[in-house]
Image (cartoon, rainbow, N blue to C red; front, top):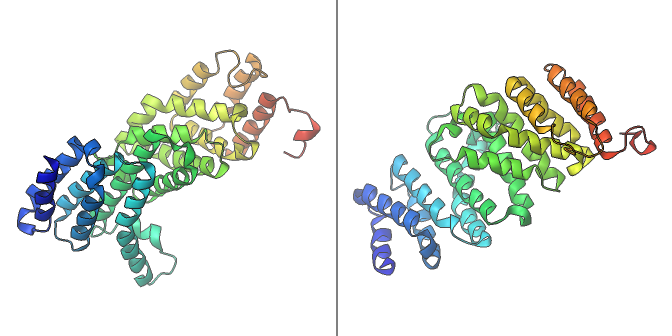
Length: 324
C-alpha cells in the first residue's frame, strides 16, 4: 500500500497547487505509519528537503511538513536520526549564518538571529525548533546515556530559546512536559558539561512561570521532581564542582516558586537517608530554613549548598574539604 501511495504523495509535494492536500497527507502517513516508513525515509527526507529549499509551500504547510518529518525521524535508529537531521537543518543554518554575516553589528551572530524578534524569520525558525526538539525527544526515548554531547547541545538550545524567544514554548506542537522531564533526567548525567547546560536550562525556564502558562503548568505539576534531582546531586550524586550550578537552580526555585519550594522541601527531606544517610533531621531542617530565607543573596545560597554537600558526603571539617 505504502509503496503505491508514497510516490504519488511525494510527487505532489512539488506542485504548489496541491500544497495543502499533499503535505497534510504526508503528515498523516508519517504519524500513523511511522514504524513502517524506515525503508522510505531517505527518499521522503530528500524530497521534503528539496521542496523546503525551493520554498514551494506557504509557512503553514512548511510547519506541517516539519511535523511530518518529526514523526518520521522519531521511528529511526539514533544514527539515522542524526544523519537525516543534519541533512535537513544544514541549509537553514547556512541561511542563518548568511544573515548573521550581513548584520552591521558583528556581535549579533547565529543564535541572536535564530531567536530574534524579526517576524519574517520566526515561522520557519519555529518549525525548525519544533523539528529538532521532536526528534531529540525521540533519542531520549531510545536511551540518551550514549549521547551526552547531544543532550548537552539540546539543553543549550532549549536554554537559548527560553532566553531569546520564550514564545516558542506556547506552541501546542511542543511537548513542554517531555522537555522538562528530559531536563530532570539530564541533571543525573555523570558528565559535568551536560549537567551545567541542564542547570542553565532550568534557570532560564523558572523565571517564565509567570508569563508562559505551559511552563507554569509543568513546574507546578512536576517541579518536585526537579528539586529532588537537585537534592540528589547535592547529596553526593554529582561532582562537587557542580554545586554552584545546583545552587543557582535552588535560588531560582526559591525566587519564582517560593510557596511550592517550601512544600516540596518539607516533603522531600522527610524520608530518612535522603539525600544522604550522613545528615540528621536537624541538619536537613537547618538547610531547608536557610535556603528558604535567602531570596536575594545568591552567593549565600551557594555557601549554604557547599556546606550541606560536605555534610552529606562526610567531608565537613576535613582537610580534604579545606580548599573547597
